[in-house]
Each structure stands twice: as structure tokens, then as C-alpha cells.
Length: 309
Image 1 (cartoon, rainbow, N blue to C red):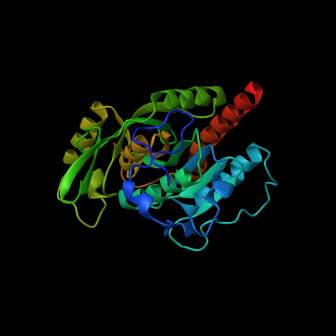
Image 2 (cartoon, rainbow, N blue to C red; image 1 turned 30 degrees about the vertical axis):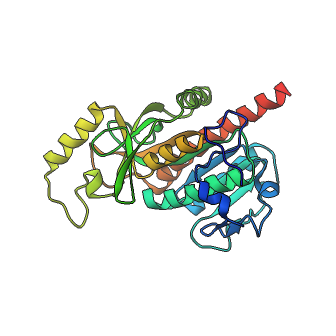
């Protein structure tokens, strides 16, 4: 398992920085039920150029069906098998150069998935991979249905950092995302002209309720004014939306040299409330917006590549 001491250039393999992997006779990616000794990973995944990840297995299967139809890869009515069917932790689907993977909810769940996904892409010898998280979020001062492309992930104190405790010591990691990719996605949204899209900071929290200043959890030790003042400070700090995965996603993609973006739709304006009031149909339409935007981007990239060749 070859290693490099520096981050890859645009044609390099996906980067892993763990010398202990060299001592493994084989590496079993437990939560994917895939392994270097049990599966031919280069044959299965070597052509992957785009990886899209999201919380829900249903949403990621829906995305692979959507992108397959958009790219005319297979019969849209095909039933795409779950590549990770040997486990119930995550779901994974593939169509041509696009891989779609669920990551569950929150930092711990997506971090576990990313460790194994990054190793999978490395073992498969993938090159020039772009990875995009698609999902939902709470907006701050934005109309529900607005799509936010993350410029920088910040913590609950509005600082652009992810803290990883390793061997009892806190390691601080960078949470920047690829600015040129964010701008490309914004241009794609303008070309689509179907919904409002903005580029801004995303606050990543450790919790859905108290961590996001909600008033409707089982416990709450602050007032409505406290909540409003906090979210107003977040908005003044450039925060456009709140979710629970972007910081570790950005940090791990930076470490592995992956070109990365976060694209989340806002389901409500948190300055106006905590619970969803839109109808099921309206919310479903909102949830499709990130996949429409990312699907358009992928289709455009593949078309440009084909014209160059």
C-alpha cells in the first residue's frame, strides 16, 4: 500500500497519511463490508470521479437514480443494488463515474464513513476525485428553499476549525473548502435559474437541539431572546446555515487532497422558528434542490471533458 509524504497533485491518488497501513496484509473496511483482500477495489471503483455523500440512504439512492437518468447511463427504472448490503451502517450506490454514499447523522457518523471512503478511493487508485456533501440545513435570515454552498465551515463559536481529540490532546484542523468549486457551483445555479443559491459560511454543531439554540428540545436553559441574540451574532459572523457534518467533512477532505464542497438546502429560517411548517410536498421539493444543482454540475463537467478529448 504505497504512501506519499506530501499531498497529491491533480493526477495523484487520493492521499492517506498512515504508515501503519503498510503493515496490513489486507484492510477490511468494516462499515462498508468491503476489503482489499475480498474485493477488487480498482476494478469496482477505479473510474470514480465524483462522490456525493448525504445523511439518508434513501436520499442517496434517489440521487444515483437521478444522476444516472441525467447522464443517460442506464435505464432510469433500474434497481441499483446497495454495494454495502453486507452491513446496515451505510449505503453505497454507483453509476458510471459517480459514487453515492450515505453517512448518517452528525460528526461521529460521517467521520467513520469518511475514513473508510478515503481509504477505498486510495486503494482503488482513483484520481481527480471531487466530493460533494448534499443535504438539508436550517437557514439564518434566508428564505426556506435557499441552497447554500459552503465557503467555510465554522464551529458553534463561529471559528473556522474542527477539533479532534487524539490521545487526550486536542488537534485543530482547517475547515476551508475549495473556493473555485464553490464558485463553479454558484455559476451552475445561475445557469439553471430554478432557485436561489448563495455562498456563505456554515455552522457545524454537535447537536440538533441545544447546540443549535432550539427552544423545543427536552432540555432548554436559555430564553427566546438568548436564542435570537445568538443566531443574530452567527448571521453577523457570516453564517448562512446550520448543520452537523461540514466541519469534519472539510477537515478530512483537506487532509486527503480531495476537492470538496458542501451544498445544503435550508428548510426554514431559524430566526423565525424551530419547527418545520411547510407541507410535505414543499419540503420534498426543497430536498431535491441540492441534487439538481450537483447533478447539473457533474453533467457539465463530463460534457466539457468529452469535448476536450
